[in-house]
Length: 263
Ligand code: A3P
Figure: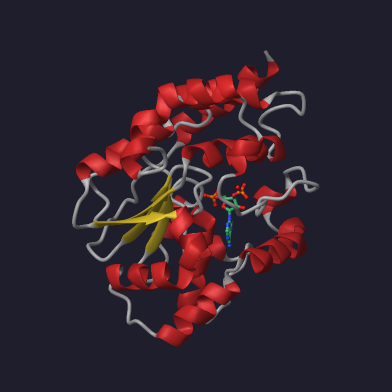
């Protein structure tokens, strides 16, 4: 099947080439960690805008908060304290972790659209077909959503700040102030408010539209589809069928329950 071939090719390629930990790790490093499609880029924009006086963009985001998987060499160049993006499941080497979690059902929907945008799956691939692969944790080399979340919840305590995507939607400013305190950055409330404003959904979507031709990964994707797409909670209700939801809860229900996404 086309969907499996494309995804498995990508899976094998990225597993082989994947870097998870920088060559040098410092005690003041903060890793922005999440399962894909959980709001990682939003957090990178918040931090990036705060550090640069609102100059973060899709063009320079990798320079400010480098991605350990895509730009490992940049991790060695940025000034300390460093903020490094990662999708790794638990890594004991990460000294401080902002872990972003999002309702897995919305993650799956977002991931489906993302995979179509990146042309990792064909237009004909149904959401149901994609879910089978998502539930098995075979979309990318980061394992299943449940194992990923559980790995961080089990291991980290004082040196992990859990940020729910939904709490960011409710009150980004409040959540971001917690992030600044956790990361030991001087807290300037006006600058924090301003970074939240600069990183609003509409602003990021506009930037994506304006910059996509100049950003490698975006320019190679289907530009008729957005990366900054909906930015909502609960969208899964419109897409999941009853049977899909039952199967999903079998795979992820216990962790969804632990985080409080289902009763
Ligand atoms: P949707 O596809 O549901 O819209 P990641 O950066 O981890 O890949 O996550 C991408 C998801 O975060 C997408 O979700 C995207 O729209 C959403 N997102 C990005 N910036 C956002 C913002 N400023 N506010 C709300 N959601 C945002």
